[in-house]
Length: 347
Picture 1: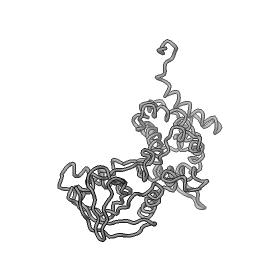
Picture 2: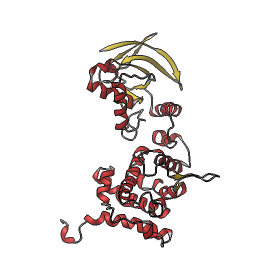
Picture 3: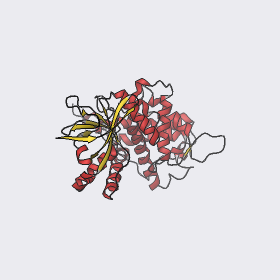
Picture 4: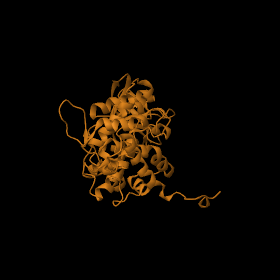
């Protein structure tokens, strides 16, 4: 089926862009998302979908709302190109034709609404379409759009288009982005607890420098996240958030998490020792199990509110020794279900 649309043409960053209105039911079958790191095709710059955002958008649509901002598309089917006339464009609306460069959560939310009631397929959507963009051009457009609309982590540039950006501070940028997420995400155990450097006294329970020093070696080119090919910033953020949330939950039950004098994870030795355990042992186990959820981490660590390491247990140790004590505490818990003698192995 071919459908003709009247368009307005513009030039964006050196590329022709065709803007027009179409029905959601016409866009849904032909659009797809090429996720960076998960797709090798040209134009793959999108991030992994967030289910909570999709559900929120679905509810927004079901309440009778629509979207004023454009869906940004990249037509990739070289065998079935749009036919461009003087003031109209004809699109073949069959098959996988067009990448979603911006608007992936909105279109997924609309799809969920359509699944519940087909009438939402008649929703008018505004699209701005490029044709045959390369990944480098798609990445530049994606960053331009998102940096204008909302804050985007600086280090995200490397996930999208790292070969085009020279920045020796990339590791620090990435860690800072992750810590900012821990400090601003309401689900985080460190929500509004990070103390940033300032000439004046700042609120917070744990210094930014403590967290940076603990994390930095593991984000280098030969660090754990590169070793296990866990390079996407949102995946890294979720792994770290889930890990410390699992710890927080156990310490909350024991009524320790909010006690600065007893909570070791607000101090350098506790935070660093826990992070050492995460990257040295827990990540590999979770990757083998293909499960990085908070629940799975909790099940592996077997934290019990009656047996937890506290600041009292390490306060007499120097920083290095205290860090090792914390890492060893977690490793001993993780090792409980390992075979205790050779007879338990099948050889």
